[in-house]
Length: 350
Image (tube, rainbow, N blue to C red; front, top):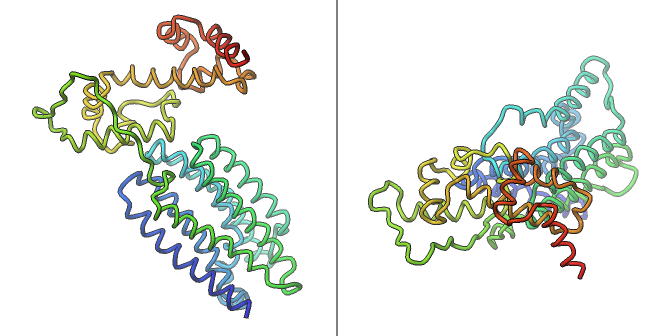
């Protein structure tokens, strides 16, 4: 009875994975990040599907897919990392495929083991679990570093659930049939999928970030009568710009260009410049430089960052060189970065 209930619960998770995947792929905003997250949902759906199917049937009829099912955790970390990074930069690069080398490598080892040496597994399940946990841990750490507070919670929950699955897979292989069905632990994936669905239905800022409207300066009457940019499109660009800068802090990327930023917002360079000029009364260079200076100020005034040099903070904030940072900082605040740090930390300790 408990086995049938477990299958019933996992089946509901599979159906929900399908619905979530369709929704993510149909969503018109942040297309590349949606694709990566949809791929993550697909992997979770496959993990659930392989645990609903009979193990004996899979071993006899679809052995290669069964083999691959134990390698799916190698895909989780890279997909989460690419999901986070693509929210800041929606451009695909061929080098992103390098993140999937561990999955291809270990799958190939097992395939060679079966076809050439008639042996499976080539890598002991506990050792494989160690490799998978290491991969998940590294990618989760990198993802958390590049996430905002809301996305960090999402990444932490997803990584924790997959950690449980990795351990479960190892135990299932080594101790299959020796104690109660550990497939029950796969229910955590169904719970995870429905939690994600709830976040989407409730329009959580993780998936539907809301930014306050940009404020124009008093006395400035913004008109688009002589431009192809409509007010509604200008509002979309302005709102999307604030969301992008707030959530991804892509201004900290020193290679960021106005063309890349415009591409992330699904608009043209000309329209982005127009919004910056007429809404914020700033050029692209001044706007990005201001955000980078604000980021540097936050880091300099944080006692937890005392171990970081001013040079490293400057580079992490998006400046190409320390000299350009020092010049811009002194021009904006009339003090050197080191003096600013001293004053800020003294004020906090007072």
